[in-house]
Amino acid sequence: MSEPIKAPPLYGLLLTGGASRRMQQDKATLAYRGEPQLLRAWRLLQEVTERTFVSARDTQRDDPLRAGLPLILDRYEAIGPAAGILSAQDEYPDAAWLVLACDLPLLDAATLQQLVTRRDPAAAATAFTSNHDGLPEPLCAIWEPASHGLLKQRYADGSFCPRKALMQSNTRLLPAPGEALDNVNTPEEREAMQHRLETLA
Image (cartoon, rainbow, N blue to C red; front, side, top):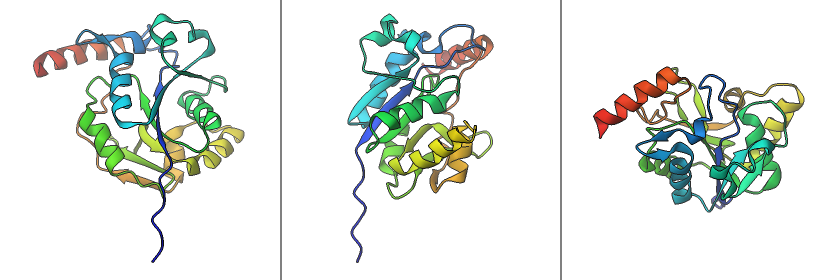
């Protein structure tokens, strides 16, 4: 009988380095229910990971909201979320990373706990399927060390889409967790989300 695979340590990575062009302001600083989204997501990640980091661009290192938290600065220019994932994997190659976007106001602790509980360390990644199109959700997913080689190869080939990387990998896919991963990208979507949260309160 073969030995069960020993799971690498699980670290958390909160992605906050995006330019937020469609929102026209830093999405990580937007407050929902009176708390900046960055701090709320940070707390959720801390509950389920051994160590937690904020992914940011070099120009954000002195931002008051980020400066007090452990940062991993992007080492890759202008390639979107893949910059944060690759930079974290370069820094701690033996860790698995629970990668989380900072624009998920409906995300709750139970959803993250489900992801961690159903993690498959023998896969390259564990991810939810999207509630909207059934494809893997790369920005609330656990990326195992085994995913690093494919991401690096895709980067070398000029392909930067984390979702396509999951589609090409041995990824354990979990059912979509309802509306928990609905994100907010524009001022109109933010206003609609504020109304939804008021109704849920």
